[in-house]
Every structure is written in structure tokens, then in C-alpha cells.
Length: 105
Image 1 (cartoon, rainbow, N blue to C red):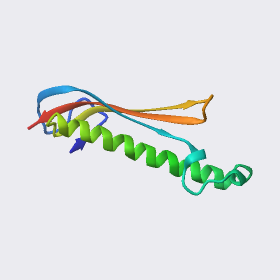
Image 2 (cartoon, helix red, strand yellow):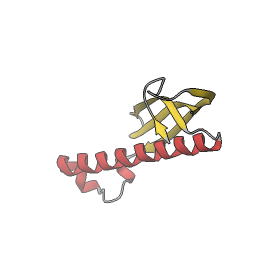
Image 3 (cartoon, rainbow, N blue to C red):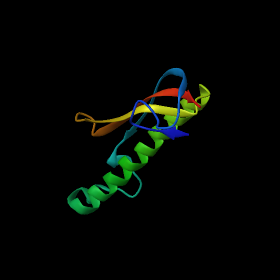
């Protein structure tokens, strides 16, 4: 499946616009594998774990986006954007990936 941040795909013609789709996941370093309270005081390990947690959440969001596109029988997603928002009161990071499901020739 083609994913692009642009609104068109070189050499392809959009034949059907199937709708906006969204993949959302949440990440928290406090619940990530391998994290302990002690790691909070070792900033390098803390940030390494947090980065791994964010990367996994991003991949999960893209997986959800692709699944929605397949449900709509799309073969491409255009206009893809990623929004990452830290929810300061909970320590959770929300990752949303948005795009338009389309059929292209």
C-alpha cells in the first residue's frame, strides 16, 4: 500500500476518494517494557526507553491506519500527517496518524 504525505502520487491517478482515516495509539514510558522507577534517575536510559515506546506507538498507529484503509478497499493513503501530543497530567503521549484512503490506477 502506498502512503504519502502529498495529495497526489506521481504517475498515478486517484479514481476514488474513500474517506478520512485515523490511527491513534498511546505511549507511556512508565508502562513500557524494561522501565523501572530507578531509570527515572538515569536520564540516558529513561530517554532510550521513552524513545522505544514512542517508536512502537507510532508503528501501531500506522498499522491501524493501514487496517482502516484495507477495510475501505483502498490501495493508497494520501495526505498523511502525524500528530504527537503529550498529555501532561497523565504522562501519556498520544500519537495520531491521519490520511485520506483512496483507490489509484
